[in-house]
Image (tube, rainbow, N blue to C red; front, side, top):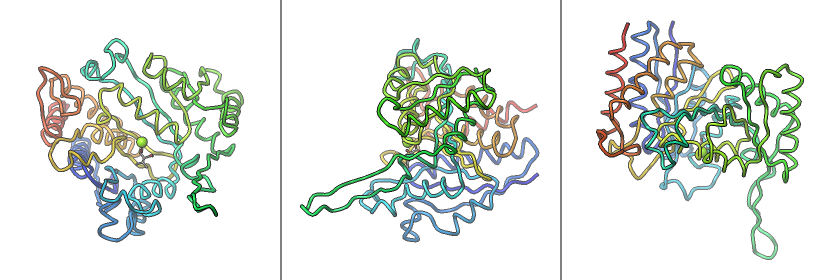
Amino acid sequence: MSYKIAVLPGDGIGPEVMREGTQVLNQAAKLHGFKVELEEGVVGGASIDAHGKPLTDSVLKLTKESNAVLLGAMGGPKWDGLDYSIRPERALLALRQELGLFANLRPVKLFSALASASTLKKEVVEGTDLLVVRELTGGIYFGQPKGVTKLPDGTERGVNTEVYTTPEIERIAVVAFEAARKRRRKVTSVDKANVLEVTELWRKVVTRVHKEKGYDDIQLEHVLVDNCAMQLIRDPKQFDVMVTTNMFGDILSDEAAMLTGSIGMLPSASLGGKVGMYEPVHGTAPDIAGQDKANPLATILTVAMLLRHSLDQNEAADRIERAVEAVLNGGYRTLDIQEKDCRPVGCKEMGRLVREKIEASKG
Ligand code: IPM
Ligand code: MG
């Protein structure tokens, strides 16, 4: 079996964490008897510098012709002044939309070795294991009208529009219920139905899907987003699957990341189209880029998600996750998860340690 993977390292720490991720991917292929053909594409700020835009047609074509896309991170202060329409982040939004990736899965699982790495109390975060299912191609990120216009009195008016239609809500609700069925069978739908009509519709449709599509084995609850933000740090263990809109999911997943010790630990999978796209949740961290300080574990865990969801290589995925756990249990830590009495390592060394554990777990 041979798979084509589009590799898009992007900007900042993207290329260095990606180097560790792709080495693990190649290793997994070798150990588990399949082939991967990796083809690199330039995206984000790097593409603006080289081609004047964040996503070229040839890179888009490459992603569409691949079995999966592995992405680093995009953006940085260098490109912050540009018009929204050509910012690095646009490439990410365009890829999500062009590939039809409406479902973003962000698992938030605390490795027990990191229970005291979080800024939150150990007894609060210990045992955290939840999945954020974020709607990814709708809502306020894409709704029309949008933009900034000049008013006759010389002031300006900025608009974005939160829009959801019944089919968009139905399909993400189904993803959440199906995911819950493989987990602890609880779905928390997050909205702002007490104020926003669009999420009143969200709540209504999620409730209907639950009732009419045979999900009565799944417990469904509705939580307002402000309360959810509080509950996440008060008692994260109450959550199993959380399903929410594009913007709420963006915000809540960063918050939830801190339950795991660092956003440098969080992988994600964007699904729904023919090709899946896999990216660490973290950004480009320009302040530490190129210094071998980044945490490659989010990207390595992202590779595990790619193997599981796009290549159906579950054993290889499990093996990578176990190796990450073993390295953490061994006390090795990158800067973002550094603790007293632990062994500080850089990005490359962390990647090497994981590969060593993968190799050792052979057979
Ligand atoms: C994320 C990021 C992106 C988003 C940005 C970089 C466009 O924050 O994937 O969470 O808002 O979706
Ligand atoms: Mg985000």
